[in-house]
Amino acid sequence: MPDANKYLTMRIAQACGIPSEHVEYHTFCGVPAIVATRYDRRVTDVGVVRIHQEDLCQAMSVTPDKKYAEDGGPSTPDVLRILRITSDPQMSIQGFTAMLFFNYLMGAPDVHAKNYSLLHMGTTDCVLAPLYDVASGLPYDLTGNRPLRLAMSIGGENRLGFVGREHIERFAVSAGIAPASCFNLMANLCTRIMAQSSQVMEEAVALGIEGAEELAERLLPRLEAHCQRTLQQL
Image 1 (cartoon, rainbow, N blue to C red):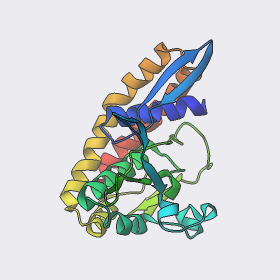
Image 2: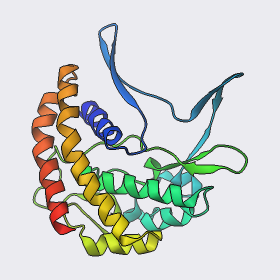
Image 3: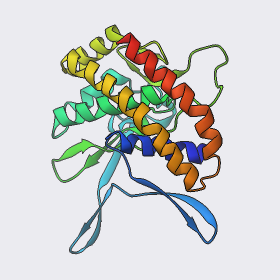
Image 4: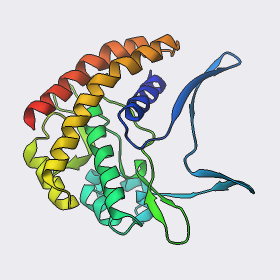
């Protein structure tokens, strides 16, 4: 089920318009596989050119053992600071905001600094890479009665179900974005996720992805409830 979870989460991201790696499901000689299109490669007249990718731990000279903010690694404000020195700060920060909000709504607990990267497109061009390697924690009973916590916070809050207007506004101010735009983005993502997730799940079941049906039964009700609660808190 973990592979099915990652596939479904990334497909929902694609369906919601989040900049993300493209994933497909195929079977090779009877062996199922999730195939991700490399976004760090470019096909040119002289062949395939590699685009240098640098995750945010590497970009900030942080060792992998400190990839989580709670362990002293990069936090949301740290990410915003480094995105301000990319080639197009506004585009990078807007992309990160959409990814951060999406990960919150999907209840993806393990999206730390090594799950966000920069692409060095040339000698001076540096942009935020698409979303990759994300899976929802909602189908699992991970914490007992304690709320699920995410690796990166929104306005200082990382507990699932606790992010409200004040946290989004605090994030918006730190990101240099109009709070109304962030409220609208979160609301739109809630609506899109609820509208797209069932269809994505149906497609996965039709493809015969192992564990997809069980995953859908566990994920969809919790995902819709979380999105509805978030809308009520906006």
